[in-house]
Amino acid sequence: MTVDLLIRDAYLYIDRDWEVANGWLAIRNGRVHAIGDRAGDAPAARTVISARGRLVTPGLVNAHHHMYQNLTRAYAPVTNGTLFEWLKGLYPLWAGLDEEAVYLSTCVAMVELLMGGCTTSMDHMYVHPRPFLIDAQFRAARDVGFRFHATRGSMTRSVEDGGLPPASVVQDEDTILADSERLVAAFHDPAPGAMGRVALAPCSLFSVSERIMTESARLAEKHDLRLHTHLAEDPDEDAYCAEIYGCTPTEYFERVGWASPRSWVAHYIYPTGDEIDRLAHAGVCTAQCPCSNMMIGGGTADAMDMRRRGMRVGLGCDGSASTDHASMWLETRMAMLLGRFRHGPHAMSARDALDMATRGGAACLGWEDEIGHLRLGACADLVIWSMSEVAAAGALSDPVEAWLRCAPAVAGTTIVNGKVLVADGVPLLANLGDILRDHAREARRIQRLDG
Ligand SMILES: [Zn+2]
Image (cartoon, rainbow, N blue to C red; front, side, top):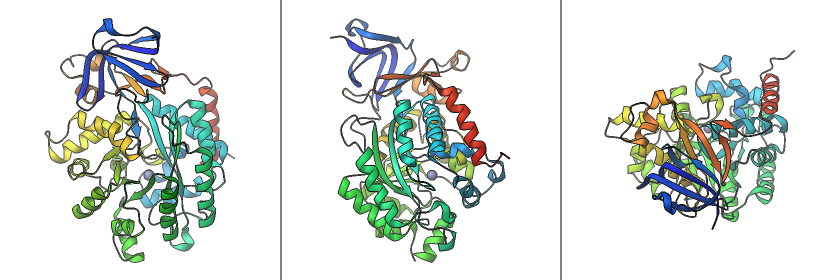
């Protein structure tokens, strides 16, 4: 049988506890079809790529992002603000978002993610000054060829109600719930190998009403969806919850019915050990965002401690306005450095970090059966990594450790659903130049740099 694509001469990281030196991997109909370590056993293929001894891993899975924020990257007036300060500084600009701006920013985000070795991403889209913005994101995902887990984010609480954002970017409860139902009907594909799914994602405990939290949990149950929100990201959130709800963020999260295997949360920096144990036991997963946390400087989750307590932990690059890049390789490296910085050199290996970036992210998205590994039958989402010969010189004994320790690795070839989307480090999207030009125009408009 002739397969669609054969990758040979590779160091294959298939999954934790399964690596093949000098192996081959065959792809057929968008799935991993066969794996071997003897060149003579490899099937005939329509396309053959020699990895020339380079590391091949599953595509990394991004478990937390805000793609639209690349329209306000490194925005000078707020670069040195606290989380709440930069949110308050940027919300008025984000009120300018429309379908065109969201389409372009999503295309840019997805191409950037592909170049950093990510093949599936969620997006937490919670600013809705105009309708149909997530529809525009699905158009972008289709045009790029990216596997996309959208989340219908929401905010109901504006400055007038004690929240942070201006009234122009919040919505009433009925509008949010009706649009959630509409998006699920239009875009959520529960079938195996789906290229698009939808989850529900109120922005944070301090930006939505209790009814949105409870009704989102109910809708998720009804349609079998994932649930996502920011949780315990900042000490200001503790103070807010104590004052408004009379409890901690985790206690409130439990009270509104979110402590379930459907849920994954971003950050989760300030829980107690007992609270981590409770959510781990309930099956809640966490997305750690190392660079964002360090950029904001407000602390970071102890990922290895969470893993020891039985919680699944993925990684996220978070919104560009806080992190300003979307390389999941960089997030994976930073996760490893954070773990070792906190607990010493025995605390965390490159394989631990890679497991978080693959299996951990897939667990967050509830998609571990098909992505985050390259076992037979998995989605054919994978990366052939590239590093300069200079940076890799002398790294001979462990390709996985070398991948994360030596200087920047980028995706040489990125494959999603069996299709090559980045080749020799270059994105293959035909109209990328036009998209970047139009993105620059929209970024200037949103940042009010014109006129
Ligand atoms: Zn976030």
